[in-house]
Amino acid sequence: MVTRPEHQAAALADPLRTLGATVRIEPVIEILPPDDWADLDRAIKNIAEGRVSTLVFVSVNGVRVFLDRMAETGKSADLAGVRVIGIGRATCDALFKRGISARVVPGKSDSNSVADFLIQQQAEGPILVVRADRGSDVLAQRLTDANIQFRQVEAYRSVDRQTVSDDSMRAINAGEVDWLTVTSSAIAGSLVQIFGDALKNVKLVSISPTTSHALRELGYTPAAEAAEYNMPGVIEAVVTYEGQN
Image (cartoon, rainbow, N blue to C red; front, side):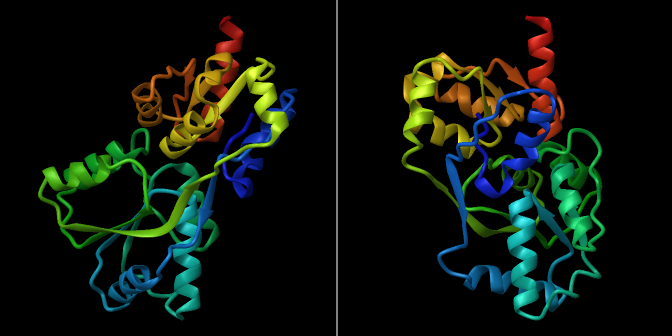
């Protein structure tokens, strides 16, 4: 069962089907615009006025919403003098597809790797981090501890779905689902809220140590964790587990 937002599910579901898996798509969160565009518009204005030196995107959704809003406000060409960093290969690929050259961070390309890179580079602010209204605070905490000047802007809202289809609920309760994908901390929380103890009937595959930590904090231990924090990594984690068990 793939639990990513509906518009992103195919990137995980299609390769799994190619490998012979039967895939059920059941999004447990939705990606929605911010309630108010004021903060995002102010951040875009600061970029246009040269007040941002480094722009950090933590997700593909952040890239999509932020750049779409820049285009709507007529400021889509204002990133020329800004160093752009994307967390994860998928985020960088989303930037490249929009014609923006992004720095690929050495290492795992997670929040800690980006923090290490900025700290080692002795980055000076102002740094702008584009993120959701909820998620990991690892990057913000690391930058704060290093006394690096930054601010965050929420580009979109990640909202829990309250229910899933009756068929999916029945399948989880009956133990008919082998694997359930957990590709963010927000998804981890939503899954526990929806399925509760029925999650013990299924193996959980986590996309990263951060997501695994969120699951454990909620009382559930993933059976597998991606070595590379992206969709191919999730698939490889499942394949490796199945090959060893």
